Length: 322
Ligand code: NAP
Image (cartoon, rainbow, N blue to C red; front, side, top):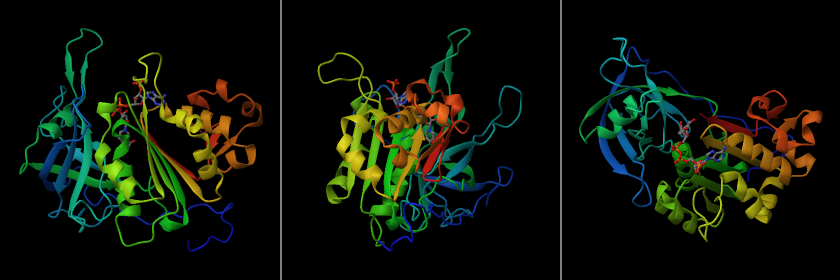
């Protein structure tokens, strides 16, 4: 700990980042160096860890964990225009997969669905393009993008709670690399909470299990929504761990220097905010959320529309949901 002047009052300072080194109209060319499934077993989904060599682009060595990059899918949409660039979270630490920032990875889930009107098969354009790519194939990329969903500059001065659902795990894999796989001092405490429908859908499960085993301060918790020990009722959402591991989170969140990061499915942030409001004393909650007095008494009646209006996350809360 380098020591903050008044940790309970200070806000995290984010590092400067560079962005848009390649615009979509001037993309760089990356090359696939790895593509592997990253679920924890035989799952109904297909999620791939895709590693790209960006050494021939401006992005090499100049992205940070937590940022994203753009993918330009070849071909045209049904209006005859080029496909819009699609952003993917970087799943690598700032040093990349290779240690030199020349290889960045992302975590891609194939979008496979039915059209609402006629129930014909719908395949997401960019996700299936990326998942079809073979090692050696070229991809046009833009970016990096994003300057808000980052670890603070003084990483070791803070404790962290990371809430992920599904592929929202991507930036946290990178951040955990920055926190625990470099020579820099590690934080006191980090807890990663990963939410998946089934245990077999957990992403990078073995990797996080090993990392947590190797670092006393790092906890890895999972919330499985569609399985229960006895097969009855609903499983857990990520926010439910605030209750099931109450002592753990009371200790972590009442420390004066804890940050909360949320990435994944839209809607998870509301549940997390409600659970925080239900479990933290008002003076601790105020470090994370500023709540209008008339809304404060009844978190159970909060809605998503109130976020950023009556329920304002402070600068200690980092949100990337969609
Ligand atoms: P998934 O494997 O289906 O897992 C999502 C989990 O969240 C399921 O267990 C689901 O439970 C649960 N869940 C649903 N509603 C919830 C709620 N209100 N609160 C808490 N948990 C809830 O996920 P996925 O298909 O990979 O989707 C991940 C999402 O993250 C996508 O929408 C993607 O766009 C987004 N994402 C965002 C970023 C970013 O912003 N940078 C990066 C990557 C991914 P049930 O389904 O059982 O209800």
